[in-house]
Image (tube, rainbow, N blue to C red; front, side, top):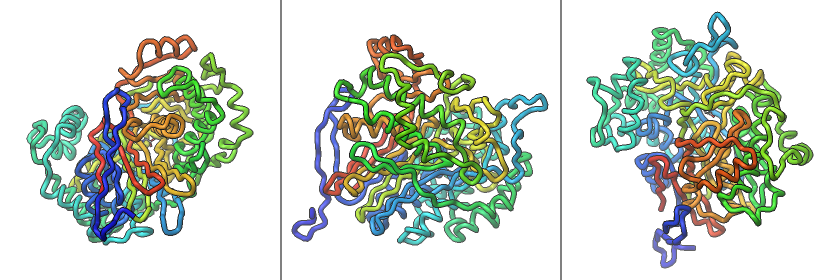
Length: 565
Ligand code: GLY
């Protein structure tokens, strides 16, 4: 409809809107495809694949591998993740689970010392913190089901970036430098990030020859290039050297799973998100459905009344996470009950519009410190065929276990920390867990990742997701409220300061610098324990209007970018 005169016209519509900080922002609409990732190089690679005629699924594969090279703190082939897909031909939405699994040798008390205490950092650092990686199998399954370009072709941009290197920008140089002490602990890791013991500088060329060779083995041999043969041998050798558990059997038997997404309605949006082993979709649904009947006419995006209601909905939703949710192969997740009107109507009765609840009175639990460390990465893609991909994948914390597989050049995750390593003891995100998420050999650990897609009037309307550990869910929920109730644009939404409550600890987290003293005092007067946080989540969002025009925004808190045509 925009290709008048038979020309391939790139239509850019510029709309000026007032950003949250009061500055004028420019929105660019793309007729064909749009890609939002946490790395400008990866966004351009995704765009190039779309321009070559590839679809959103092809672009997701190319981006997934490219981020493993350009965004090593979270992009990965040694971790795992989830994707939501919308196929325009079949009008179907599916959820792809390529979460890591506990190795066969894992046991329920593997991170406890002889006195039954959690051994410090044991689930976060080194070989035993790693689950069996799922990313390569997940991206391959995505390509096998929906890809249109060749697998080998899709991996070549990542291979070249690793082999010939790329110029380090300020963001990555700072990131590597700030994790220097941890990255220098293992010689395999130090030799990549601190060759000659020198911190990398912006402008340096960063090459990763071993990673390039691994990517090329995967390009040539697909799954066998990672889960068997040389790469698998190198993983097992590294495990042997560092007393790890991942075996050839674990690697050979790893399988991603296509699952039915969590689906619920909020206002006019038909929302699909990730089911267990992620808690993301069901908690997102609970939060939004608890809020749905609330009259927003007196609320503003930063008003204390809205923040209070949102926090109280989160308190109720997160209180269910610890008790009920876990890997569906091992645990019966009561999703239908958790999202039912009867249950949510009864829970909503507990919300007092003037007074914060008390988390211990809602469910028992032990408040824990809420440590500051999380790194995951999300990308959103919409193509000219109408397909969508919303993909979040991770090593867990920044640079995962900090352990690079010797000779293979990639970091292993530290996802074992997402299990409940001891009932009542919080993980790195301050989340407490119970038996549903205890460690069992071959089990997937519970996640908060929430890649999400929404339709409006049966048509694609929204692709979004975020890193941020437990804050992922509240970030995605706030984005949907900001669109549906406050009418904000993607650019305005990514610029909004965020807030978070997760039941335990009983604290309302406000993004530092985002809320003035009057807002804070009003929330304190309602009984909230306020804490400010500087690190926050990174929303990557694309919206699609009724004419199929796409606009996106990458979170200014990271190094992300939007590419489109
Ligand atoms: N590793 C963070 C999460 O999966 O939620």
